Image 1 (cartoon, chains in turn brown, yellow, orange, cyan):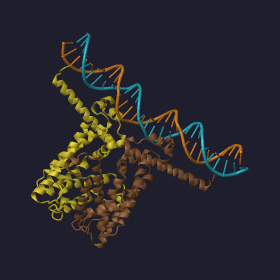
Image 2 (cartoon, each protein chain N blue to C red):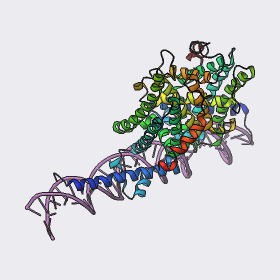
Image 3 (tube, helix red, strand yellow):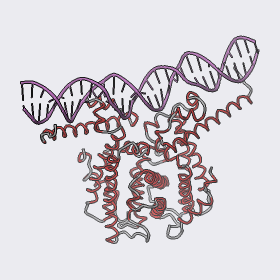
Length: 244
Length: 244
DNA sequence: GTCAAAAGCTGACGATTAGTCAATAGGTGG
DNA sequence: CCACCTATTGACTAATCGTCAGCTTTTGAC
């Protein structure tokens, strides 16, 4: 067969795309329900009612499924960040809005934490194909760019003055690290509650405000109720039902 | 046998303890050289010149080896933190000294990052025994306590004033998250260099100073060269040869 | 409608590796 | 020297990833 009806092709292609979605859906459920070690190719095959060989036509190996899951979630996060960054208001308030987006993201995509944690293990990462990696990294870059743009705006309008020799990217690195670390600790530390951190989210917001106050980014937290703002933003822009 | 010569027993026990050390040593090498997926019980057995069954008399399963490795490293970190906390000087300078210890720790125990990353994956953590976990968590708690004590000192002498409703533990949570996140990103992100963070350690220090300035912890970074201080502390207290 | 070729799908199989345990070696007290 | 006990072994089981020869379905020319 040298050519095929394009309509037939697109039907087949649609079927294949739908099956790929189904594989990811099933993999996500298995991850949430039995963790990384519970993710099993034979079980996925049984669940989607195709053979194991068919799964390997979509994903070169198990790790690629994880990267694909991560990419799916990160694509949504990018949309959320962009929506947050487009919020009308002072630059620091827009940054807080992105913070609210990040909070909403981890709440809504609970499985993403598990996936990213595993994917970042280098010996797992190295088993994936450059194409899949590139998709995921591209999301990461775009998320960065979105937030860095806010800092640039702040510098441009004078609400933030960076010390000589420092760049907007460093502030974003700080925010990124703070969120990444806080979420890792909140999800995996067994000593947090014991020592008096009852509400890690609240403490994260508090520290976020300390950092940005430390940068002198106006309005300072004394002059604006960022806590209140983040609560209403989560209600208004990032309710669960808006991202189901 | 109801009793044995204690000298014979202790010789045997010593042999066993030495073998356990050898297992961990070999496991660490394999981890560093071929990553998590390269860690292999048969290879460890071949390397230490005992059979696989003997390894399982020391460790219930593979994961316990990882937790034991993590605990070993964390015990050293605790010593480093205590040494740092004992530094004579203003409380905030002591906190910066702990930061220098944390930097030196990751540089010297490069394998620890790999281990901790894997151990924190919940489906792996759950395969380990409560006893092993408790040892590791106890180190974590003691590290926390050491740093929280510095914050208490700061509050006591008035160089730090916490807003009403906030506790010293929250500041430590922020520092912990910042370091944890920055190290995770520095080790695993492939987009950092592209976006202009050439020196993550320097950026981490910069952000650490922003947080603590944000808390108003004196002396502020404008009044003390913390960067310089951390460099000399790493040279004086935490040179590589002091922890080999 | 028929048929040959292409594409899609399958699940038994090979390979790897964690963990077990019956058999064996080695040491100890009498 | 023997009876007994502990330490060690490595062949074996089980789980599971990834492969591929062969089977089934679809396609499109006639």
